[in-house]
Length: 244
Image (cartoon, rainbow, N blue to C red; front, side):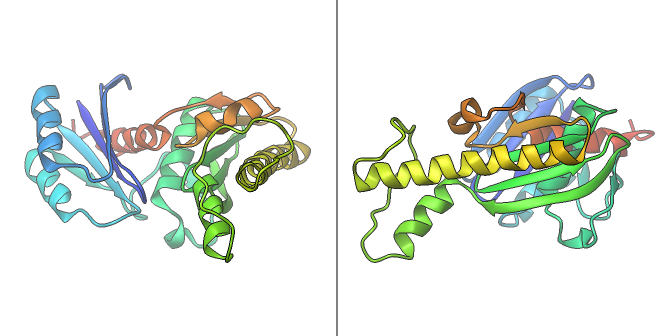
């Protein structure tokens, strides 16, 4: 069995995968307890693990995995099943790399645009022959809502929730409408631009705000959950060949 752990900016996640790629268990916490990881390793008899971190360093988790499993510590030097053509690969988020690997594994012979709607709105593009070219980063839903409150004197902090009518009739509704429709139009615009440049593309949509936005996207999408964890699993399998 294989254990993938993703230490993100707002959530820390762990998932157990079988050798066939079936997700057997997943845990998501603000701070992932080491006891939970130990339980997963023991219950599922995990032999190999991979750890990725774009958030706070968890040396305790790294040490635990190294003691109980064969650990692949995911870094920019880790061999990958795709080619990275980014001009500054050392600055490329490990979560973006894992997401791109997962997307390419879903559609291995097609151009794939991955859109992660989470803390940030992140896009990543992989060509049909497995070359990662890059993408874009902009503020996510919650960040946009917080920024309106933080950088003004009178606009209130509004919590994310579904929007109703097109025209907001209160300040709170106006903020929700502006932020939500703005990010939806941004997503649709990005997809349209890629479609104009490439004859065919697949769009993979994921992230913590996926459910808030996916019904407003006007293009066909493949909605996926825990795509970073699945990408980490694919990277782990790629590196574990010959060691199992």
